[in-house]
Picture 1 (spheres, chains in turn cyan, blue, green, yellow):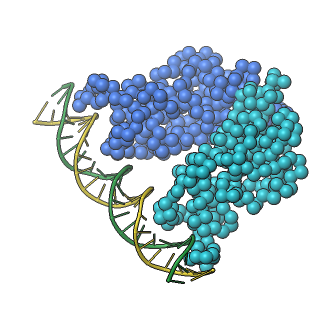
Picture 2 (tube, rainbow over the protein chains, first blue to last red; picture 1 turned 180 degrees about the vertical axis):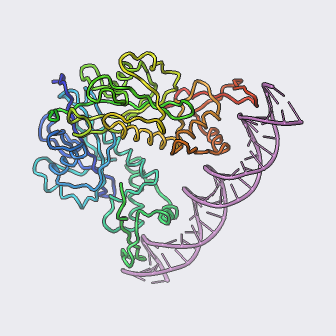
Length: 224
Length: 224
DNA sequence: TAAATAGTGTCTATCAGACAATATCGT
DNA sequence: ACGATATTGTCTGATAGACACTATTTA
C-alpha cells in the first residue's frame, strides 16, 4: 500500500438538486473498504477496458450505483496526491451535474449502496477521502456560474414559472444556510427579454390563490 | 500496447509569454518515442515516488526540461481517453502559466530537447498527441480571463507602464493573428483607480521622445 | 372586498465606450 | 515650435438595483 507505481484513477460526481427549499447533493454510503460506511460522492474507478474517456467513467458510476442518466456533466477539477486515499497515490477527476430531484428514483432503486439527498449548506456529514473539499469546490463553482448570470435550468422541472426560477437562483447564491440572497424581481425578469435560454409556453399557466403565472420551458439547445 | 490496466498519467504545461508583439508559447521538440521529433507542450509523466501532487509533476517537468520556475501554475482541465497516446489509455492534466520571456534562459540551457518560443496565433507547427487541442483550450482560457478583467500581470517585466500593460491585454484579447482588440485608453486606465493589483512606483518614469510615463509594479500579493 | 402573488414601470447611480482636451517630454 | 505619447476630462447610452405601481386570480 502507498507504493503503487501507477496511481488509482477515479471519477467522482457531485449531483445537485433542489429539495425542501434548499440545495441538495446526492451522497452514497460506501459499502466496501476503504472508508466503508462513510458517506461519499458517487464515483467509480477508471476501467480502461470499458471506459472510452473519463466522462464515460463518471456516467458509468451514476448508472451502476444510482441508475441515473444526467443530461449534462461538467468537468471541474482534478485532485491528486499521495495522501487523499489510503490505498496510495491517487487521482480523482471531479464532475458536477444538475438534476431535477424527481428524475432520480435512485434512492429506491439502488441495492448496492445506501443513497441519500443531503442539504449542502446544512446537514452535511463527514465525507470520505477528500470529498468534503471536492464538494466545496463544486458548490462554489455552481454559485459562481449562477452569479455570472448562467441559469441553473437543469434544476427546474419541465415547466416552471419565473418566480420558481428566481427562488432556485437565490438558494444557490445564498452563502449561509439561512442567508437568503434576495434578487430583485424587476431586474431578474428583465434578463429574459434578451436571453434565448427559456421559452414561454403559450397558454400555459400555474394557478393558485392569486393571479396565474406564465409557465416557461428550457430552450431545446440549452447547455448547463 | 493499448491494453494497460493503468493509464499513463502526465502533466503538461502551456507557458505563455509576450515576444515580437505577439503571444507566444514555449514548445519542446520530443527527443524520444512516441512522437519523436514532434513539437509538444513541455510535460512529464507522473512519478508517484517523487511527486507529492500533480502540480509537483508539472514543476518537475519545467525544471528538468527547461530550467524554469514559474510563480503561478493554474490547473485548467484534464484530458483522458484511449486514443490520445499511442501507448494506450492515458490521462493528461493541463496547466498553464504566464512568464516574462526574459526570465527563461531555457532556450539556451536545455540540452535534452530543443526548445522554442512560438507565436500562438500564427506560426504554430503540428503538435504531438492532443496538444493542439490542449493549447487551444489554454489559449482561450487565457483570453477569457483577461476578457473578464483579470490582468495578465505575470507577463509583465518588473516595471511597466500602463500603455505597455494595455498592449499586452490587447494582444491576448485579439482573436486573429492580425486582428487587434483596441481597448479604450480612458476606460482601461479607470480600472486602476479601484484595483489594488498594481502599484505606482513613486518617482519612476519611462522616458522617451515624449512625456514620461509613470512606471508601475505588481502588488505583492497578486495571483494569476 | 381582501389577500396573495404576477407582472410592469420609473427613477437613479454607476459605468463603459467614444472621443476630446490638456500635459510634458525629446528634438 | 513640433512630434509624440501620457494623462485627464466630458458626454452619452446602457444597465442594475431599488422600489412603487398595476393586474388578475381565489377565497
